[in-house]
Image: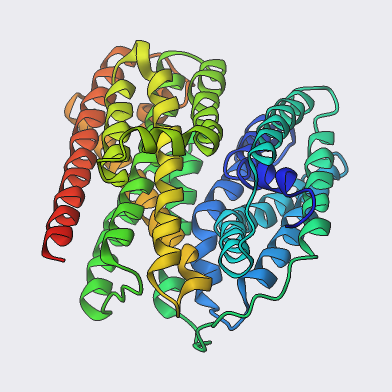
Length: 448
């Protein structure tokens, strides 16, 4: 097994949220456009849409080479962040590189883990999981503490060195003898999705961080245009399911679930509480839930071994969604959603990898794109519902994003009600999708 695998395992499984914390804490310390929020907005946008851009240029490159390439890209991005005191352009470049890389690094790394077990019967031992947990519990506070210090750019240095260790370690991976799809054509559908969602998410994120009213108009126009184009694409291009449909479906719902908590929690924290509450009562519990799922998730599934694991996870996820709607349990809800969302991702990864011999090497990337799609669709719907409910409750549109980003306390009580109603609608919608997915899976199992 690859040396220092526990270190790489820990870093790859925190890469979905730790760089995001870096840009939240450090990004607006520099004088960039959009009141200093430009690096965070860029990172956030490419983190969600980068997978579609990469898929547009589909090639014969194997997962092993892609993993090394994008770890190197993230490493270069981190070292660019170190140079931010010289010029803000360096942190903006870091945001592009790290955002694009982190959009697919975890599924790439997980694929190589599955290859190790599939071809060589090698997997991490219990002691390695313990060391990985210890590494994560040291690395995350260290990076966050440095980011909050006077020399915040050194947090990028620490992160870059850690990524370099991962790159050096993973260079010794074997060349896995596995089939790669020969199609190297430019994927028009993926590129259209990348352009549409990049523009829309950038606008949504920008208006949350600034008070430029022109962005609010662009949100409405962009959202309606997006929905229209998606409808036309579904009619013109036949969706190809290279994996069993239930994997695509649950990946989509998992993306919606995770995004709902993070976005709803952010809006609630900033409109009703504070920035501190957002970081330590919303994001931190979610991140801890993800970490603990790596080590306790399997034990939870085994306790309910007479029930399908996706059903157990669905119940846990829905409980987390319900707890999110109650102000005094929102932190517990975040831990639940982080825990069960991470557990669902791991189970779907396993199912996807085992489902097809011809798509083994790219199965987790397929699953990842559907999860990203669910996140982006949820974000669009949630923002539109908030705007609609605010319009019906006579909150001026130019006040809406000032309230949910903590820049104004006017109408905060009314906004809480609007948030809560929006939350109920989406929680019931996601719960219905989870119920439908489990019902269809049960029917499929009985028919087989």
